[in-house]
Length: 399
Image 1 (cartoon, one colour):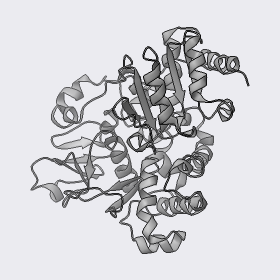
Image 2 (tube, rainbow, N blue to C red):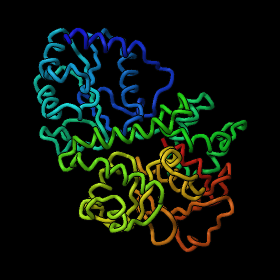
Image 3 (cartoon, rainbow, N blue to C red):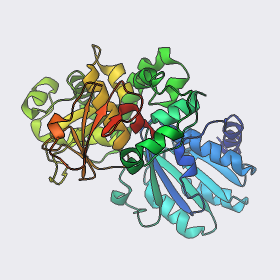
């Protein structure tokens, strides 16, 4: 494959990309920076976001190009040589997708950054990569972002239902009357909430709900069998056992893990289990909850394990999950991307070390957290906040 074919492919992909709906991160990234990295789980829309950005630059492919490093072209052509040619031909902006698929990617990007000071580089990689541990440490050079799945707010917007503003956690906690007045009178927040919980976390779920479960199973297989192969400490021969671990977890969440039992059920040595749980969390398949006041270490046993989001929960559970599990999974999925969440001594979740939340149905009372100062009940099945009771759906407006 010739160099011209790669730039031609970039041109075709950009032309075919719709800019009608953009992820929240599009308006958050400081695009003027020279080196930008975007991490995220598979299926969250990283590639589409970058193709949209190139399209809106409205530059020809020899000026602004998209290269996917899992392209067969890069199995026989070096990234450095390709970028050198791109630069000599007048290249100004370069998007490098799936960088973790290319050996020594961080070192080559570092060299490109140093050798071509007028070239702007944006790269994407799996959420499992730690750029500070790569051979060419980019952590001091790159402005890094992480892209989670769709929030409920984004889902409503991308479905063409309603466009709502993003809120801060403090807005939700302390300005609920103002929020209530700002919401359109015709808006019924619970009308589409159930559908979001089942199918709405991944952008591809908006295309065809009927194939969503199949695509999620394929997604998890690819993460475990392909992406994790790039981890230095992961033995790819254990991929099947790790898939078993995902399934076992999915049938029990949320639960306090018994490492010996998990080791027996999956055939994974108990000394490796905490590492594997950490990998699954980095891959955004599960979320680990640790006790408050306890430092998080890779080898530390979590207090509780959840699946990362309710769409995964819906796809992987053999039986319909309890409503309590769905509620807690949703709450955690919307908070974890931007806030520190721990398990408190009282209540369900402690956020940023100071806000305690008890999650339940509309009949849930304040009894369990009554003595705590900064504590709220989060209720499902209510539309608007009342005193210190906040609707569960409202946490879907955080990004």
